[in-house]
Length: 488
Image 1 (cartoon, one colour):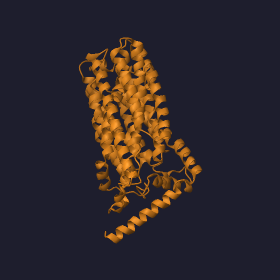
Image 2 (image 1 turned 90 degrees about the horizontal axis):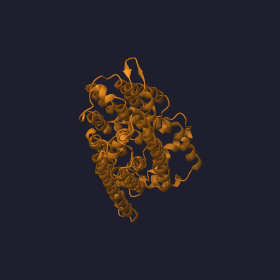
Image 3 (image 1 turned 120 degrees about the vertical axis):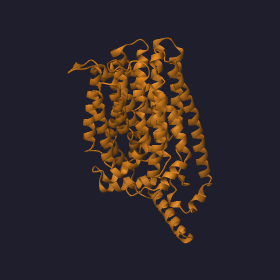
Image 4 (image 1 turned 45 degrees about the horizontal axis):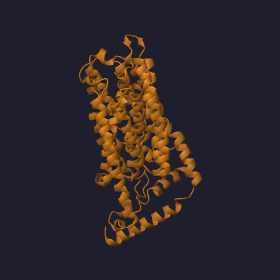
């Protein structure tokens, strides 16, 4: 491409940016109508997908109290922890390729196919009669669930503007703490069933897996692939849905998500972005307490002296508190257009919770600590989802970057699944201490990322990045565009 051609391309970009900027405040009523329709036709399905995802990966913790280790002969040593760990090996490996497949296969088919498949696997866990069978099922469960979180983040980013995204992320992610509450209630009832030679714990997997399969099949008929394929939108609404996403990108792209093609250029851009690695490190340390809390809360409560059904029921209130805080934090995060501040506050709250578990001998204080952990940790995770998606653009940069972040972050499962060992019960000092340290690192790294993004935005405000507009690839700057502002 010669200098003359470069000049023509850059002039076209400038004109396109001016045209989009002029349209940015057009159609406010149409914008609200679009969001209402997306909220009604998309969010319920994503909420259900994430709800069943967390129930089906975490119900092994409920099954533990219902006799699974004893019946499968894994009640000693670290075998149970191994069964937890193997889930995350394929879960981590499939994330990046799964995100790249999402649009190519069609999101409205791909996501429902994943949930249906893992629902079948969850059902099969109830039929296992050995430790080896349990391990195989957990590996398959991780393989099918591995593409869900990144897929849902990218899917949401196809429909909502950057600063409408976090509230929606919170609305679907609040299903995670709700799954702990709902799963605890359901397990307390299902764990009492003995029928057809299957006693107690298998029924947790039978019923929860079957419900997941039915929900997955229903999703096939209602989830659109992109705004352009949404049957519930008029032609004018489809056109505005695509146009507003270009406006929201602040000149970083002029290509609709339907027409954007994969290019290794986008992969390199995602890998060169400092925010990719900062978010990955923050999320890594945050997921250590999140995963261990989700998996071991029944055991932590049982360690306070409560047994079986009562311990299952006592897991419900902390998870419900986490559910409410996720929604509230997500709402105010989008209102203020800040992410990092909420993560900082959440980690401080979670730290206080683990301190209470460690220093107190009173069950009331320890139980109150589980509330603080649920409220602090659960709300921080959707904040990170929004933070990653907000600060990587366009689609394929976001798709690859989100996959990298989630893959790195989920390596924390190798820690989280092995810090609560049976030999440490009932106080679990090692597990609580490691989670306390992980949250302290989460807090420090969040402050580092806020400082970096603020510094980079300042450089762009002063015009220090304007020279990028005359580069050969100026029309493919993505989040590096001088007009693009990072979300703090």
